[in-house]
Image (cartoon, rainbow, N blue to C red):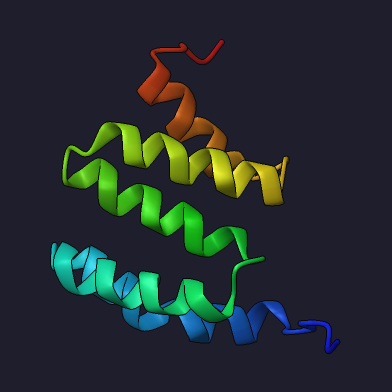
Length: 94
């Protein structure tokens, strides 16, 4: 089985269109983009982090929590996913 050895730059380029949709509040387009990307990159925590951001923006809090948790399960040190999840859970930063 081929291992996914994409560089950080490759991953950034891959995510760029979806980030653009998020920045422009085009959440439905962003959602379609990241869900399609998820089909081929299930091991990439950035996809789940961005899905979490989209669901959070759409006020779909349980789905947002689920996506941030998925990102953290793939990358336990993902600071932004942790920050957003803690915020949704009402945990204050110390």
